[in-house]
Image (cartoon, rainbow, N blue to C red):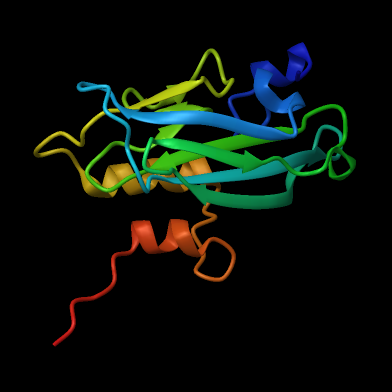
Amino acid sequence: MATGWACLFPLLFVVVGAGCSAATIRARVLDAQTREPLAQAVVLGVWTTVSGGWLYHHELVGVRETETDGDGRFELERLPSSGLKDEGDGQAITVYKAGYIAWSNIYLFHPSKLRENQAVPADILLERFPPGASHERHLDFIYSATGGRDNPDTTPKFWKALHPEPSKP
């Protein structure tokens, strides 16, 4: 768990969730209204560490991704602990499915603020994307939550989910 001083800084990936000690993160993704499981939701894990003293910066330790199965369940292998230092380590988990508001263990979409409890719960509830809501603002939220890690080479599942294939002529 992160030290008390790290929790005070509203910076991306500073706080470590309670579920970090396990080798694998397991959860289920459900529709928030119906409680039905959501298959093929993409789950992105980004791990960073803080380096430097007062002029600190975040260094990427690694990225992993997976998708939910037909029952909405996923397992995301956590990075080996040897790649992380003790203080300031960060784990950011983002879940995305088209038609829903992305879920982040770090941030709330609306209002945009840090979550108080940044542990990954057993059930992750995705809210349907509201009619008339700003897709640009939602993409900005996803970019902040993932540290801009939607890259076709390193996160192909997440990239494909966020950037639908162009229609064929």
